[in-house]
Length: 400
Image (cartoon, rainbow, N blue to C red; front, side, top):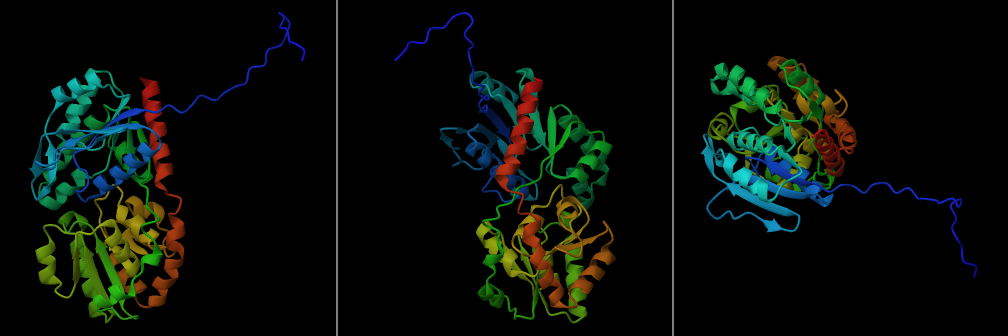
């Protein structure tokens, strides 16, 4: 074999290697987390789970949920638990207390590449301050319409101060992720900057039409001709449940063969039980239980006007159940009117009731809509959503 001798004139071929993906150390700050049941806790936990599957290291900072809560420590995942107080009306949820000093000490020892704040309470505000002290890049989520909720609890005068606080909070971060294009436009009009649209993901393997259960329908007293109406979410004023009840009562008065099922719990449950004694109250449900409820229903009634997104819209569509909703949040972006569901101009209660009467005139209308539900959201896999978030995190780090 001949030896190859290199000279100064010998060309050298260098293969170009793409740089490997950078795995990040991400500190995530939230004031709600499973087993607490709400849209923020559920969707954030899914996002973080998929970021972990993409080999990023997660440090979760949250309030301690009870005295037995020790947090989890394992490879690629750690939890820092801090003090919290029960939230009025929702004692099962905690409000994190200011913890700037504790966070500075923790992050000096174990410095993250980026801090992501998912809620806007006192704990998250102190996290934002601690990150800025240590010159750490910060991103945020806008997940809850606190300012809209004020109208439902008799403190509408707080709306402007809350908007001012939220604007100040989010504008101090590199980017704020919002779930819909319409929410982006709304917040930009209120002076919010650097907004990025990242939709919520959906677990299509859990929420599937095959979960339809005839035995469950029979337990509700439903026969094949029965139109089962479903309401999913907190039983609370901000969900516009008075309109859900009015629509149901209008359908009953018109002689429609309907049953209504409420999934969830909250301060309005006792009132609803009195006003609607023939309703089915399923209480708090696991994902698996909800999957059966969605697939076994014929129409989701979702008249809420306070959602930043509305995960129940995607869950219902994934389960093969069409949705009647106002033209806002996720419904406005993922429902094609008269195809996989029905949209009503925002804030027109009578139009909502009239549309409910119209589409339940013939059950065949609902059956036809089922054919288009699942295909309309199948692209919203959680891994794709995690990739979008990852790209935003990388950009925030590059900006310094």
